Image (tube, rainbow, N blue to C red; front, side, top):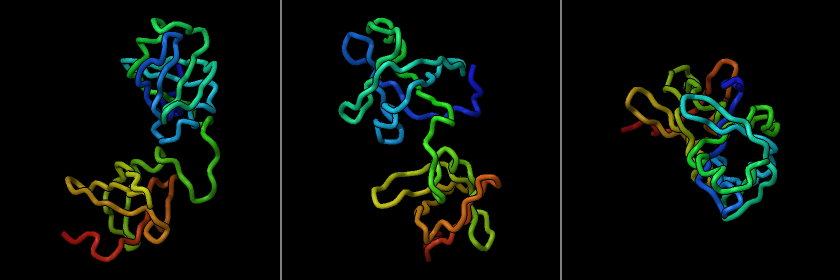
Length: 173
């Protein structure tokens, strides 16, 4: 069984496609090509277990990835896989440039101002089109912080923190 700490959630099996054992997978990255480049992945099972699968072929189809798994050639062999989440080993992710981060690494960081005031923990990231927005929770309060170079001053993955310069009025009620 794989080390759970090394696995990254990348998508979900929506269902089957056709009668020859293909799966329809929605990528959480928004880019179905991210799944078509894989050769293996894991599917989560109830109870926190994982099963490894070898990808025979994968193509992009209508903003989804259609995946044919090795040795599973019939719809009846893959019906039970619908609804399961798709995971990969961290080392299957492409290398990033300096200043780029995977969302899975940012979620959970403690967010503080440049003055050192703790705002809360980064709980979610929203895609808005122009820039991402970090959702920071401080108790019951939700703070939406634009993910721009002007606002995000530093990210310390080892120290599990992010330093931000808040735009004027952001915390006003």
